[in-house]
Length: 171
Image (cartoon, rainbow, N blue to C red):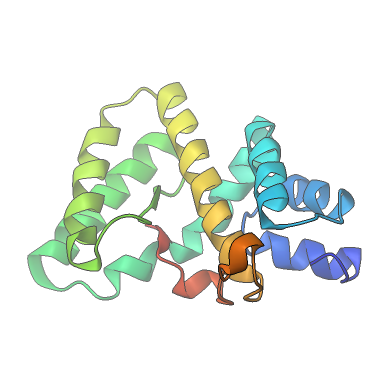
């Protein structure tokens, strides 16, 4: 990330968060001494997203919304599609949620419960929650974007992966 061109860095960062402003800001502030510094900068950039930038990032999540539904069948798939459609109709953007600490076997129940809970939010409150989920998504994607490198104390760093195989799932 530190040694790539600005254009290549921005392109890679856009896979982590769909805001051009966010990606440009992180690319422009390179080099980062370590993953923790990059994650801190990503958090700060996430907190500073203007409404238009947040809207752009949420819009970028929409094509990913079928990820979880793709492995769901029957009544559960119908419930997920209906809840997602209700959410998008109410708030005007994709439902995003970070499933980092959720077991795959519990993900669908967690998503459906979160959808039901969040449908009761007012639009401003929900936009803030969606922004927080985007921040968490971006952190996980960044950690997976970088190659495995040793950290202080000899602990391995994050494994290389793409946005699509991350446990951080927009729905």
